[in-house]
Every structure is written in structure tokens, then in C-alpha cells.
Length: 302
Image (cartoon, rainbow, N blue to C red):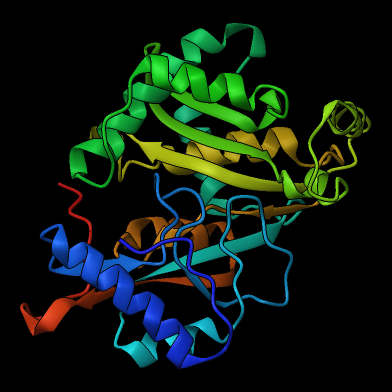
């Protein structure tokens, strides 16, 4: 993979970087390179922004000069997959079919949707791991995650987590879906001039207490496979929306990216009323034409 790419608008300069990465990867036995990715999981700083330059970036989102697209494609990189972001106003009415599904599940014994309690994050760490591993890891789209790893993540998120926007759905007390949203950290960090000392941390706590951050971003969403296609996704989203709307806590909501290889997730975003706000591209470059280029396969929901 190729990451941390930074170049002036000059193909000759960019090609030196691409060539160097290619040669190093070939020396390690690789036959292709994907990029730009900034190493780690796909939830942060992944892909090249090609649409959406007129909007402030959310925390964890790639934000690069627009000419990078021409540099990558001029070298021979091809579009491996698109990453779509969707946005909406928090107070936008939710679709009627979401309300109908919410009412249906709310009337069924055993189903429950609720937001987390910060005091009991240990329990929710286990619930997160259960849903994540069933919804994503088993499809080969991510590595399995342990409760301990999730707890480390939750502890890092704790200072900025809003328990009112982190939701789980249960059936007979077993976790079956999750809808994880957090305030956009860039709405805090943009005031700190690149610093994060104790003064900035106190300022962050003050801003959180005052509720000055009006932007919410999607972090994770998933439904255990055997509960997919039943409407549990709509049930959970509507439960969260019904709770958050009308309170003035947030004004804008931007969902985490969905790959074009995951049409079910893209359709959920669209059916919710989201409008495409940005597009990233993850590129692939095949070395020496050793293999035929193929785009990322569509997700198998079986």
C-alpha cells in the first residue's frame, strides 16, 4: 500500500514518489499497490478526495489538493472503489417507512433499542465486538476485534463521547445491531492551532459542556447477518433519531463512508434522506501488468 502521499502539482515529482514506493513493494514480493491509505484500519484517512472540496473535512477524513487525482491517474492508478459520504440536517424528517418499522419492532416482545451509559462502557465494548465481528469480520472486510480492543477504543473516545448518540439494538438482551456516532472532533481541534496541551484539553471540556459542537459524524454501523433485511437497521436509526431530534443538540449529520462495493449500506444512507456530500477513491496500480485489473468485488451478504 501507498500512504502519507504529499506532492507539489508536478507529475515528475509525484512519479518519483510512486516509483520509489513501487520498487520497495516489489522488493517485498508485492505485485500491486493500493492508495492512498494512511496505514491502519479503513475508518480513518483512507482514500483520495475527488469531490467535496467545498466543505470542511470531518475528523479522520482525507483532505488533499484537488490536483492529486490527476497525479494518481496520470501514473496509471485505476479506481479500485469509490467511497461515498452522505449528509443531512439532524432535524430532517425521517422517512415514514422507518417510523413503521420502528413501531413494528417496538411492539414485538424481546426487541429493544437504547443508547449507552458511559458508566457501563465495559458491557457495551462486548456488545460492539459481537456485532462488529458478525457484521464485518466474517465477510473478510475487517479483522476480528476483541472486547479488550474495543474497551481501549472507548476509553480514548470517552472524553468526547456523547452517550445519547451511541446506540445498540437487542433481541432478548443479545446485541443484534449498533449505530455509533460521535461529535466531529475537528469542530474542537480547529480552535487549537495544532496544539493539544492541557489548556486545549480544558478548552475542549468547556466546549463540550457548552454544547458548541453542532456537527455529528457516523463512526460505525452494523447489523448481525441473520437480522439483516428485516428492518432492524431502520428500527435502530429511527430510535436514535427520535431521541436526538428536537433537542437542539446537533444541526448537521454526516455518515461514515460506504464503499460502492457495499450497495446495501449506500441504500440505507439514501433511504434515510442523506445527500451525497463527498467522494473518495481508493486506487490500485498493478505492477508490470502481471494481472488483469479488477474492481473491488461487491460485498457478499450471505
